[in-house]
Image 1: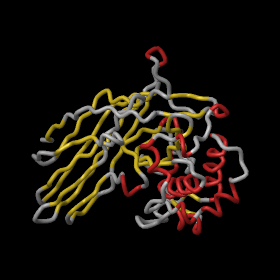
Image 2: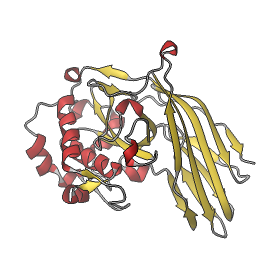
Image 3: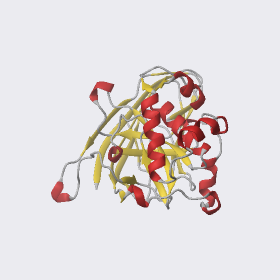
Image 4: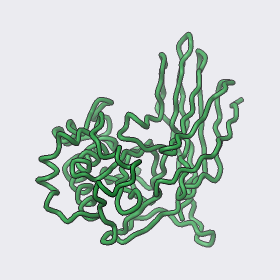
Length: 301
């Protein structure tokens, strides 16, 4: 088991008359990702509303902030229990036998234009044996053909753009892999979260985007950017693409500072906690079961 302790701090200067926010920075509850403790601190005396989406398990916090400085800090301790499988035992599932709630992740979406990538996907991966190995080949192909470069793309960059420009950040790698999988009738979804174990040369800890692909009877983890250790991936939310799981959606005028994120892993072999490490097996932290649990909120004095 992996235990992660982390915090996310966001700072804004809100312009008059006020501003509405929807945040997705609460750790998701699943059977394999358990939130042990959590705390939300708010720099204004507000009455936020927190709800969990029954279909995805994503947790959203909505609030209306008054003009002036808004600071919020979310901290949590999360336990990750990984389902581990041999890659050769993880098959692709024909569309006719997929669970109904998985079907939405077969369709093209705003940033993942799979309907325009059929030729590329068929040429590169159509002759490979279906299963986990083929999906891993897609992941590795994206890693090889796209260069990671900070601040190289923007909020409108799509999978099609990344395929042509061959440069991007983690969300661009994720969008391209998702689109290629869907072009082969393999359900794939975007995951927003943070990670432990990334190369410090990439800069300070930040939000991270990765991919989950539905194979066998669950969602398996992939990081096409190859910047993270899959065992150290922690989920905030899942969606068709980045448009569904922005960490902050803002309705109003604000000036925003860069997020401040800190994360550490607990090394306690006697307690059953190991540090994230690279493994050759197929890993999953979601079989599709969401857990609906409330959130503790506290004002920041």
